[in-house]
Image 1 (cartoon, one colour):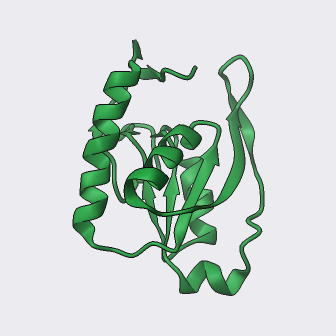
Image 2 (cartoon, rainbow, N blue to C red):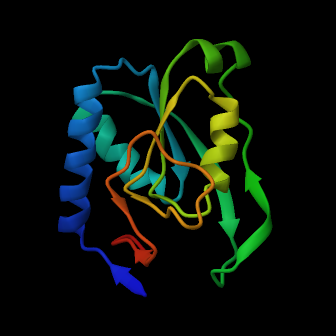
Length: 144
């Protein structure tokens, strides 16, 4: 089932996530946004948590018609290898659907944390560090 969330719902869910992140009392070096879906959430967190967006990684796992692509297309991080493991970053995406994108990014940033609004437990091979809701619905975000 398709579920469309409003900007107001997005804001409320984001606020809940921000509170969880704040309560962890971790100090993040920066935010790494996974485009395109992670950009709105990363921007909001950058302001709320006062953490700079350090990098935007371009990832694509769906074709234009919504089909899952056989090969995940993901930019290589420009952050040097030694800083990927020595520092804790907050990796931000909108949803962990199959988990392929987050899983691949987290291979590059194994000491970092990940955050999404939604997680699909039946299809995702990766569980984010922080998320608000489990779902099996097709989520339509306000920017889509």
